[in-house]
Length: 335
Image (cartoon, rainbow, N blue to C red; front, side):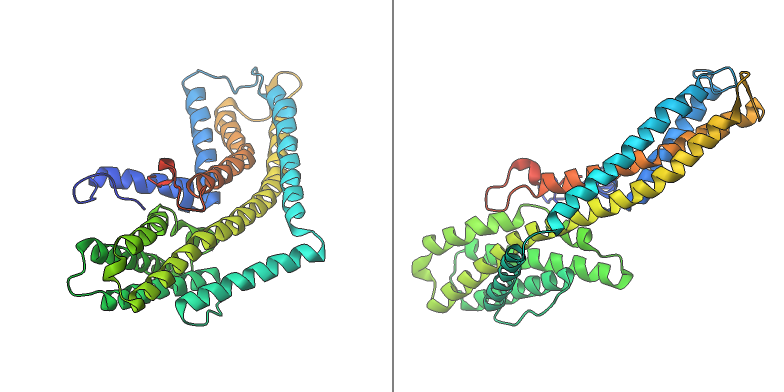
């Protein structure tokens, strides 16, 4: 989402591929696939250690104790974590009527301000479509501003307007490219707004207005003000989308942890019963090693799900900390 430092902003193929992989793992990838990959890696790792005789999974090992005590209690703890997440979400859902009236009024006021700045009525309820309309409005205002600039306008003015228009065009292109596949959701829409571009515009527009006030016509100043209001709306809408995306992720996480926790607990009990009380096993040791390795991978699924969602929520939180024009260097997403 951001360009690497360099003369033309380009990146070597290897660096770009690595960045895209990290971006997929941390942000864009299906969380169940990411969690499944981690669980599979755990199973393969344990099996490799068993084959190399680094760890023991045979009838004489301590696997039965691990399964019946450590893993079982750990899974129950994870289910408790899922319940705690549900309580956190419920605290945001419930409230007195006055609170919901305030939220609704704030949403309506925000929509009206954006509509005035866009000089069009924005009735879209879908966040993706609403953001697309904002991006289109920014492009329209930038085009109008270009027409209002004098022929001898400073290059800084012209370049900035082109930069803002290009930013809005990239946002629209990302949304439109995802729409035919049906893959877009709140997190996908939010990912298009990561980066400091809007923050630079928030500070650059007032500076240019003050610096080139004598060279701007009244119509150009009006277009600048509308453009500034639209950029502000991007900043506000980004934080609103973050709230929705994180709440949705946490709700989905609590449900998946509960589902997989029950399955993993059943697998752990079944594996524990595979070992007999006389330091034996109901299956041969050749079968026991891959069986236990696979079972431990499945048992780790609730934990890997928790980790996969936590890293995405943490990534989103880190790169959308600021709501205004002060953007820490770390907020520039680099994979």
